[in-house]
Image 1 (cartoon, rainbow, N blue to C red):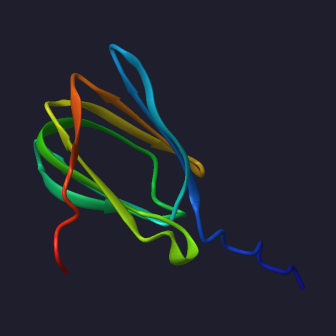
Image 2 (image 1 turned 60 degrees about the vertical axis):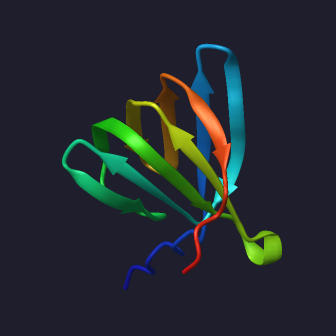
Length: 99
């Protein structure tokens, strides 16, 4: 009987802007606004390539690190295996929204 692979609790995220790398690290989730609506990217997410609409990008960080928020001017998000890549036209730090 085969043993299922242990699911990861995090995924690797890189956020790149025209100015360079804005964020690289492990996250538990990313909430982004695409042209098709808002999505939450979690570990194990299906492969995805989508256009980002201007709006919030909220990261849930591992453990007690909390959350980090940005405002994205547009761009692209790619998810493949346990890696996510955001290519942002422009990015600004933002206040973390209340739950």
